[in-house]
Image (cartoon, rainbow, N blue to C red; front, top):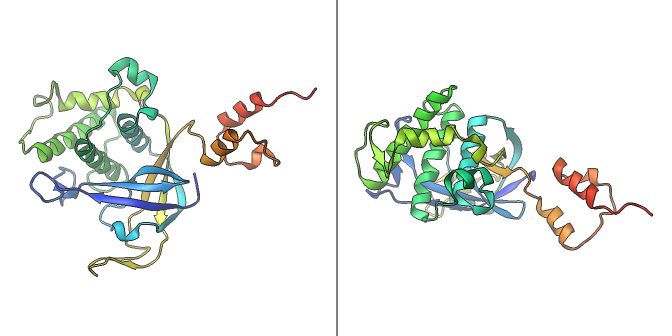
Amino acid sequence: MPSEITLKKSDYFLDTDGSKTYNSPSFDKPLYLHIINMNVGGKTKVGFCAEHGKQLGNTLIGKKWGNPEPVTNSFIKMMIGYYYCMTDAKYMTDAYKAKFGSQLWTDQNMIRYHNAWIQALCWRALGQGAAIPSDAEGQRVAIAKELMYIANAKNGTSYSDIYTDKYGTTTFYEKGCKVIDNPDCWPDVDVTLYHYIGGNATSPDGKKHYTNDNTQAIMVATPRGEQPLMITKLLSRRLTPAIPLRDFPVLPSLLRWLALMTPASP
């Protein structure tokens, strides 16, 4: 992962009642629906906020986040991998296709809501809001409840029982089971947290003032096996680097592949 990333776009969306929020059972205040796009080494990736209650906005487009830290929390990695799998065909695994077909979330309005409940779960896994249980059953229930409340926000419904209320053909609890009980279906991702280092900024209306201390840290993920842009360009040009491959920030699997592709000396 690069040492710095920049904000490409931060979109906030209206809820069904115009409030741009949904009421999560795990937080004492409504949560805003938003999707964050970050420029990560020349690629656009969806990011997830890491500090509930801090600020973010399009005033910061082009500003930098840095000081990267690896995120090792397995629940966060699974949930972001799940989101990537369901929103981008190139991250959909063979295991998922074999079990569930190849249906993606394609409706942008629906993706906004899915992003919101996964964001809430990531915050909780980071110790913000109600804690995520460490056991699988508790995690099934946590996912089911967030899904139920986001469904109520999206559709104006009043679902209240994750075990009996159905969304489509399955209960919310069954949807939680799908995520937790099929870890092989979600891509294995490396998640990195970046801190805002872009300095002071003020929104055009003068209402928001951003600093390095009050601006959200952002998490982005790279599915394992995804080639860094630098290496992709080298391969497309059929160039042989003049410096040792160990000096390139590449994955071990790619190094092994390159070694196999290098012709033996006569």
